[in-house]
Length: 386
Image 1 (cartoon, one colour):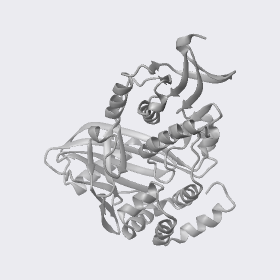
Image 2 (image 1 turned 60 degrees about the horizontal axis):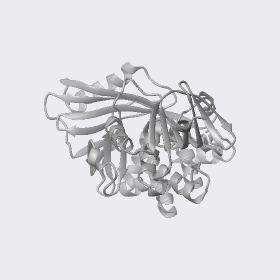
Image 3 (image 1 turned 90 degrees about the vertical axis):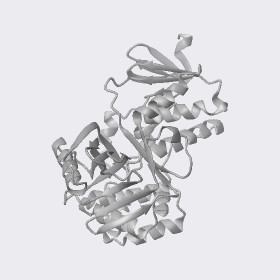
């Protein structure tokens, strides 16, 4: 074993979760003498995507934000709801800026090492885990692995699941069409009648915004459908067909009750999407990546299990909400409208952040007044897949 191939911890994947965890290690003095390797296969395309999240007060990423908002709008066929994000600002940053910011700080620290390599497999060897790469082998006491393997992808379909799939364009309009101080949280006015689908608008300037069309459904759509909906939205609600596409993003995010934490072992902890860090009922992950990275470091210090196991209360609620969206996908607009119309924005965001007290949780569930929740709840008592 080569000395320069042995580390205390190896993080496989230099994406969102891997960099969040690396950043937490970097800023915790407890780990200042630990050696950490980050293995990333690299992405030659370097596509710039956007991470969005809500946060109370100042945060670690405020200096690199693309924009933040304290006001937002929700639109549906039933009406408009003005949302107050003054307690929890809605924030967006580019993936490129995030990665650049974190990597710049990490590369200044000698305890970290970046290697571009493709991980082929891992095996246990005495007190270490061996990571077998395409270029060489690497050794560590513990591995944090962000890869989602094909076996898990197949297993997901045996549980309640949807995919959040989307295409977004960053557009520059010929005239000033956007209100930079307010964003569109969800807009259901252009949608497929049989699916939960909505448009999402993040204004960066008065003439520049990210317009994204998103589906919560099992199957992806043809690229032309998302793009046609974006064009139609700009024409109908911003009265413009005169725009340039400055950039684009596309993705598929699994929303599922699959117990990802069971894929971890004593020496290999799954993180990110592979660790179940995506909120099953919403598809948001940025806040979870930061929160769970801190939790892992706390558990290392106290000698606890490093897997992130979902809180039973919220896992149950995610299962019910995801079950309703899966079984009655066309009801998504009504479900979200009732939730947002009948509860304060602060209360909803605390609920989605898994910070609510029991009384607020009960009030939110009651506010949706849906027979479909009762049906799915009963079914959940004896079926794993809803």
